[in-house]
Length: 400
Image (cartoon, rainbow, N blue to C red; front, side, top):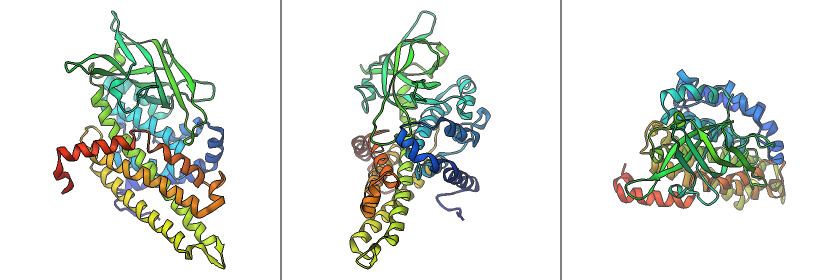
């Protein structure tokens, strides 16, 4: 039985953890290997998360959400990722990159119009920032939005690597997209980026391709989205023209925290697998747990797992979702946890030998899935750069 502690700071958090853990055991785990092999998104299972109240986890209750905090988001991503990180990534793209973005940055009218559908699971959302030639350097994006005489906006460009960009094998596009586009140049000569909401059925909005043969995260659909003279109403601009940079920075913090939470889930399951196998496997007349090489793999994995888990829940405790200012630790925990998770999954595979290398045993899939966490939501190199800059600006942060 779980007990309330820093990882479950309230009865409500504990209830969410137990609910998601039970859901994972009963519904997620039985399908995880199959959907990974098929490279298919389990849309029906995903919609059940809406019935549990999880798709609008951090959205206000008045718009159909659960009104919970960053700690709750960490709990859900951790628990889902112990079984199916690809499914968890689809959840992140919907609940954090679209729903939370809208809940924090949208107008009351936009929240009332869009949040009920995405919180219930009626509509599947995504966020479109990366492009074929643009990743971390978001200000260099080439997608444009031009205001028309009637106040509507015409969007042109392509967005790449979009999780939930399509929702099935037929190329059906996401129901609703949070998209960033260039709308001009600011007074410093930089591209001025603005935020828009594009709905399925908009003229000129389509899926370019579903991206196949990914190393990992195969249970989430990744797509290229095409916007070809895509017309959207004036009411679908979010905030003021040129305000997207603030939207990006606020939401990147919770995105990075959630990705780090996925690393915690991967690490936990990998550690469980290698620890159990170390008792079951015999070599030279004794359990392999008695060999120093195996003890090193398990011991280092335990220490790293406990360190990342404490760091992420401490960061979540301090994070407020409606404001920025948490970049140092959201970058720090993602930098540490994602690489540690990859290493822990690798050690689990090493401990399990040939059994760890085949798909029937979950660590092979966790090992593949873990790599994406070092790339998506900001590369390791971007986190190193941000941390160094932030500590130069505020060296006393080391003392706090």
